[in-house]
Length: 208
Image 1 (cartoon, rainbow, N blue to C red):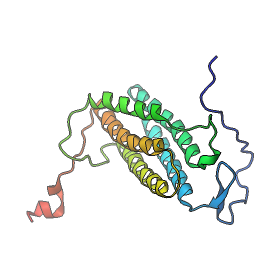
Image 2: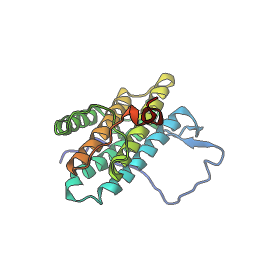
Image 3: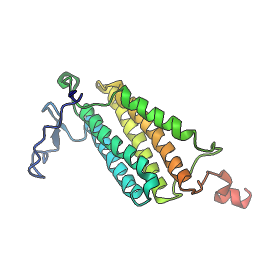
Image 4: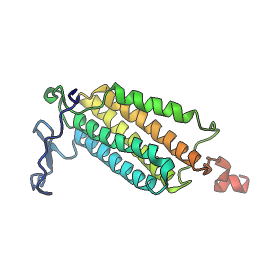
């Protein structure tokens, strides 16, 4: 039997609190203590926030019947991948080991393949989409904006410290995928999209 590429987690979570972070520091994967607001921890925390927002989207998916099972599976896979990404971000380059969990070009390519297939089923867009057409679409757009923030924070970290290029590539593709998935879910359910119309503003409606 082929060995999995990544080493399984080696965690022992017996208690919720440790008091070791009361001084405003936390530990990286290699054991180094760093401030909780350090750029590397900001990146880790934003990826964690993104994972939680995907959990909210999955909760919305599960109430929408069998036609959304494929999307639920996509989102669950991405949640696992985001923990792999967090493993990368929480580790200094000198502490990375060969079988450490991470995202690679394979994850980026998978997102691109899914986007290409789904986008081919969608009508072309003539304007930006306003989030809120339905609960799931709104949840996916929230996740998309958190993903964009995670990408910005990771890019900023990369200006100061070493960050694998796949980390930024993955977040960039994922934000696009979340947009496509939001449109695809609405399309499958026959629910119309609300498009941006600049003349629906107060100024536009009054004629200037």
